Structures are given as structure tokens and as C-alpha cells.
Amino acid sequence: MSSSGDESMASEIDEQEQNGGRGIPDYIMNLEDVPSTLPTHLELQKTRVFCNLDAPQHTDTIQYSGAYAALGVDNSVRLDNFYQNFKVEVKRITDEEMEFDMIGIDPAVANAFRRILIAEVPTMAIERVYIANNTSLVQDEVLSHRLGLIPIDADPKLFEYPDDAGGENNEKNTIVFKQHVRCEKGQPRLTVKSDTLKWLPNGSELIAEGTKSAADPAPKTFTTFNQKSLPKFSKDPAPYNLDVIVAKLGPGQEIELEAHAVKGIGKTHAKWSPVATAWYRMLPEVVLTKDVKDELAEELVSKCPAKVFDIEDIGRGRKKAVVKNARACTLCRECIREADEGEEGGEGEKWTDRVSLRRVKDHFIFTIESTGAIPPDVLFTEAVKILEDKCERVITELS
Amino acid sequence: MEHGSYSDLSKSTFSLVDEDHTFANSVRFILNQDPRVTFCGYSIPHPSENRVNVRVQTTGDPASEVLKDGCQDLMLMCQHVRSTFGKAVNDFKTSKSVRSTSEKAVSESDDDMDT
Image 1 (cartoon, each protein chain N blue to C red):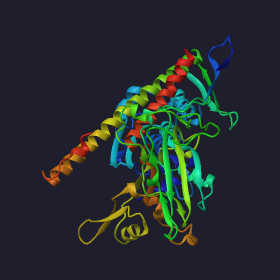
Image 2: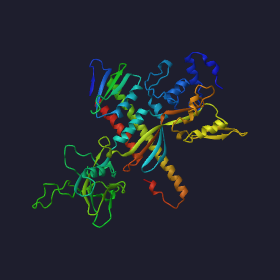
Image 3: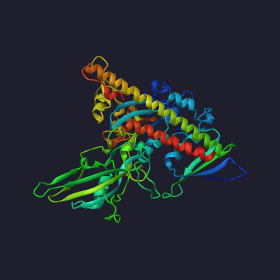
Image 4: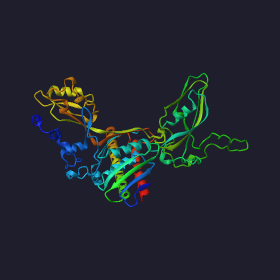
């Protein structure tokens, strides 16, 4: 159907024809986040990444305010424009995981949220472990490291960061846990799980070295406080998962220790990261630029491993391929690969002429997997707040 | 924290301590969309130093003012993101709880969705 006969003109015209002739569907141009001022092919290059067979094309985001000055189009940031176009659509949400679509935002800002989620939202994690007795096979340092990685279910907002200057641990910056497990002789091997970590609201019970004296009636411990005086926790601090395996004990082996959890951020150590992962991907867009019918339609449906396409009956026993679920597309490009690549250069249509794979540059499918201490929707709100704080800090430093 | 010429305020490099790509890249994006800005970029001079240099050149306005406006814009953007997100989550949760309660009829209370 394409006017291939006219395409023996100059290469520039050739290119324009291709972009214009790719059949941009009306519904793209009618989207409200597409201002109608730019020529269609430029608009498409600005808002979509073309996932071609060899390489992705037009991957840049056009940021510079004067990028389209020659066309008389203003590309500067307008907050009211952002306010109008920005949308959030929640897809699913549980205590530990959520997925939502963030539409109309730049990758720079979306990535800032992701980075903050991973590295800068505070949580509580075990930082110091005082081992009184450890006869298990797991070495002290390995055991401490394992304890550190256990997510602690406590609201970090109720706590302060520990004092770097070596000040006293107090009820506002430390949670103390005790673990004392023993595998009796003659018993089968014992698996020590995280539920054996018990919260000590009155602080440390271990006596600090060198302070023990017969005369002192109240021996000094590592902390002196009473957490009962704190604003009520909604629940007692405890590991979020009670079935994390910490160590295994043989008959006669014993672990006795005290673990102090403090507040921190993922930048310092990954154990403080509140998310298992937080990631986003751009929305895939699959467009059939030509009608794909009958055997070709069958072939297209069977080619796609993600089941993006479906077949529609168009009467009289004829079939047509339609895009059913573009969101599931992994951009594997299997649908535009020729079955026998050896015979390239042959005349006739190629799959690249029929199917166009794209990504929408300002539509992010964001997924947050929390470790459990903070629900994922609260995490995201916190992350945005942290970016706001950063801005505020710079503003105050400048004025 | 600011390095630049005292006579020409339109070009400055701002050295921000304790910041990284997170902040610098988003502020670069905001500033590049500001028509007053002729150039904006950032660099991290050394990976083990907690510092980022943001270069701002403008058409005439003081660079620090333009940077301040950029931060202000970013902050407003964040506030809008936060409120939109909060609303979307609330809507989703209420619609889900309405659906589940209507399905389960009156047999179970919905007190888990209340808070």
C-alpha cells in the first residue's frame, strides 16, 4: 500500500516520508499530554522511544527549553502544564508490594524517587551485636552480619539517628533485643529463627566490661533507659519476618547475645534499605502500522511469547490481528524478527513494516517491594518528602 | 558553596555537599527547561567525595536566583506528586474495600481498611 515508487527522491524526503508514513494512529495525537503544536513526526520522536530491530532510537528526553525554538514551539517547563498532565494510577497494593503508573513526569525525577527509595529512606536495623556466648558453627562476625540484615518492624519516625560523637545510647535511638537459644545434649539439631529475638524495653541487660564490682549494687550495662516511657508503639518492636533462619545449633551448642538496632539509611549500608527493590519501566506501546490478516495474523500471534496480540474475526472467515495487551510486551522484538534472516534483501513486506514497537517516555510503571517495616505507599510518600527537603536545604543555603 | 565571578553573576558553579545524582540530575532537568538558562550541567569531581558541582549559566539573571527558582519548582512538583499519589492510593483502597465488602455481604467487618 505504501507509495514505494515515489521514494527514489532525495534521502531527506525519504526519511520524512518514513516518519510521516509510519501511520501514527489518531489516538496518540489525541492524547491530552501531546500538545498539538509540533509536527507529528517530531512529536512522536519527543514522546516515544522507537525500539527498532537493531537498536532503540530517539532515546533522549528533550529537556532544553529552546529545543524547538526554530519551529516557534516553546519547550520550557510550565508547572500548570505539569499539574494538568500528571496522573497516578494504582494497579495493585498489598502490605509489602505495590505497582502504580506515574504518567507525565520526567525520568530525571522518577529516577530520583527510585534512588531515594533505595538509599535514603530511613529504617531501623541491628547495628551492634554483643555476643556473650556463641558455640555455634556460625562465626561471630557472620552471625552479626546475618542479624543486621533482618528487617525490624519498628517505625523509624519514632526514633532519632544515633549520636556520632559517641554519646550515650538512649531510649530515643536504640532498640535492644536479646537472643538466648541452646540446643540441649541428646536433642536433634535446632534451627534458630528470627522469632527468638526478644525486645528488651528496659535496655541492655549485659554488664559492660570493666565496670563490674562487688561494691556497686547496680552494675553498669551498655544502656540505661526505659522504653516504656516512649510514646506508645502500635506494636512491640520485633523482626518483621519471624521465620528468617539465623543459625543452626548442634547438640550442646548455644548462642547468647544482645543486639542493638539503630536508625540509618541505605546509603550507609544496604541493611537499612527499606525496599527489597524499587524499579520502574516505561510503558511499552505496540502499534500495527498495517492490517495483518489471515495466516500472517496467526503467525504474529504465535510469534509473541508475551501474548500481546489477539485475533479478531472480521467476517467471511477472515481474521485480523489486534493488539490486546501491550503492557505485557517485554520488547523482545521477536514479532519484528524475520524467520529466515539469510534471505534478507528480498522484496516484499517485512515485519518491521507491519509492527512498530515503542516506549512511552513519560509513562512509568513503578513497582515498590517493601521489606515490610513500612508499607510501600508510605515509603513513596516519604521518598517524595525527602526530595522536597533536599530542595529546601539548597534554597535556604542560597538565601 | 558558590563559586563564580563577583562581577558577572550570571555564571556560577554551585558546589553542593552531601548530594549526588539524585538531586543534581533532577535540578539539571528543571533548570534546562527554564528559558532563562543558557547552560546547566553537573559533575561529581570524585566518586569517593560526597560532593556535586552544578554549573548554571543564564541569559543575565543571577545564577543563584535561577537555581533557587528551579529548586522551588522542583519542590512544588514534588508536593503535587505527593498529593496526587495520596489521592490515587486512597481512591484505590476505598474502591477495593467497597468491592470486597459488597462481595462478602455483611458477614465480615471491614475494620482492616478503616485505619
